[in-house]
Image (cartoon, rainbow over all chains, first blue to last red; front, top):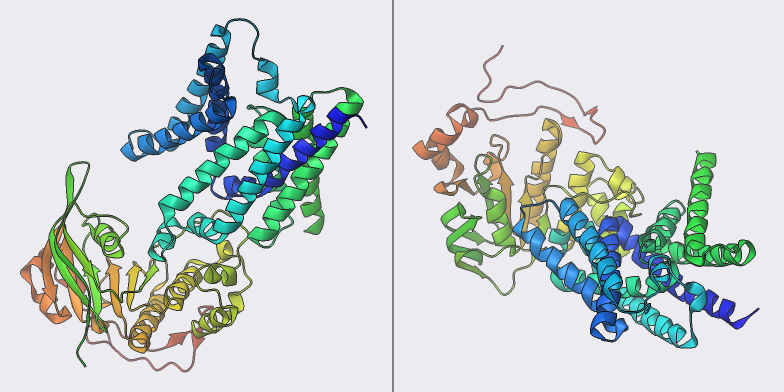
Length: 262
Length: 254
């Protein structure tokens, strides 16, 4: 196997590892549209980073976080539903990202790789970043696990019982922004939410506890990466969409599995 | 026994978007006392409960809680997404880790058979009991119950109220109950607070029902009938034990 394929595989597995448990929270808390909004604003992060010559690793996390905070602020003012607000922010961020990229002199940004991922261009340096961030995200999720489940079940009940809801939900937002920045490399901004929610939704059908579902989602996401890369290698299809299509395939299989049971 | 002051609100004001919801509300919650907060829809009951719980801050006025306060909270309802795989037992363990204690508590609420059932599959009455179980697992000295019998049929309501009264005694805790429905709650209540943005009247149930401010809001009829149920139901709604029909004080048929 060639180096670039090995790197691609390792990068994909590293991201899938954390996409599983985080994806579960996205599904449980109905944050799919929120994930999309952060992903789209990550594109704006890249273009602004290039435009202003700031380290991309910083802008790709900072812009989605700023977006998340702005969202909380706008939601509190309460004159538009969250759904509408997300629609406005999500697509404005995507459009602004694309416009800024078009303004950049020369061809310094590969738009296709941003939109649909560029797994086969992963470097050794990228791997370090992916595994460091993944480890940090897993540690945070483990540390806050019980509180995260508690605020998912009912934030008010959690608050009365002593959970610092603001702190824990801010941490979850930060984790989401981090994972999205990582997943951008694998599937691109347009398909990130798919990598988060499809393996989690598939895992739901075989799980009895939140922990089982988180682990199952991780394993399914990793299997998805292997299948997607194999498909990409053999059929010469783009890696990101191949990974997502594999996830959808497994999800359909899980539907059939349930039907057989009942 | 000297009852201990657990929480005191003084001159609470709260407005949402410029619209006053609570005006100059003061109250005291004492250990071992059951307080019922009644009032029409939109009277600010839930807002007041949330201020007592510390979930929202008043615009002005003070909330002083005893340093020993330990609140058990039973929300009006909770909605848990069906994609979260969570058994009733696990739901309780989120508040109290000991599996043995959780099992025992479920048994004491006569819902022991629901331990492995997904929490989303519980009926209205079963979920109320599960929420109450979670609240008491924390060994609270203040139990806050927001519309505890909503969505439960009338006999189930009676059972739940009896259960709450029993718990208040065995835990020797203060109970704050939010309700828009009167006749069942009144008998066991020590203090009734009638709220309509401000406190219209408060005191013992008999006192309050005579108060012109109360009659103005609820009319006269609601307080006259005291319900007396002459048979028990088990959880499945079947009649348990022998039936001997008796009449309540407000009952006029033959």
